[in-house]
Length: 334
Figure 1 (cartoon, rainbow, N blue to C red):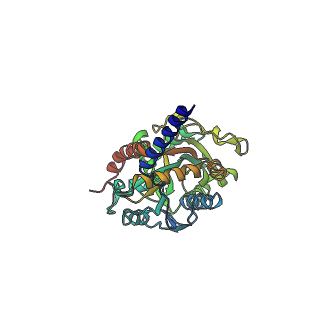
Figure 2: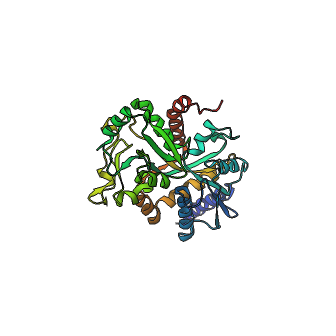
Figure 3: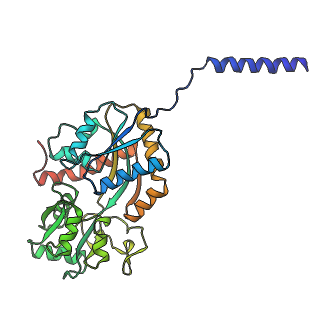
């Protein structure tokens, strides 16, 4: 008995000495001061709404031990926010909430940064794009719309901003269908929806949230969604129709099978892997809350979470697809 006790005691002492000899593991990195979250868009827009939702979730669920300060820097289609991010190399207390504009803007404007100089954190969701027309338009579906466009090149497509996603998709459609739609930029998707309801344009390419009130008001109607599969939301939205009832544009003979843009979160460049990993996990926690899931459903977004190599591949694939469009339009920066 005594020899067994001695052996056990010796083993415990040896284990204790080995544990003490191991280096003390550092605590996981956490922010040491207030987090500044910069919105690459103006007050009230979709990017602003998302940023303020994230701030509310962080506070309500106590996901951070520091406060979150939200600032809007929407100048130059978000370029103001992205340049600010570049100037804050190594600062782990700053995030930017944007879209694909963070990596596409440098292709068309000399802005003094490339997205590779920044640190991608995550894509939190994606917006589907829908081809809309006014309620009593003579064409009944997307195929009929594009037959009308080919017969009448003066028909106009409206959208939010110039050299942005709406105009890019219009040019991509012209490229794949042989049409000659003229693009008219407005200040926002909401304004484009109003102009379409008033029959001042033939169509627009709004995401679901931007045109839902006009759809419910029987002023506009969706022709097709730029997705490989119908949308997942089956609850009735306008009369007896749901988002899931909208046919895909591919099934209507349009050459673009899918077109979406991501809701992205970036950090400055030259932060540590541990700091990036902290925000990846933080944003993932945000997307799992009831508030965020309700936001995704209410706005008919595509539930998505991308980070690391998957997000980098997404950015590179998106860039590769639109670069020829930008080149044909004469937008590419030389």
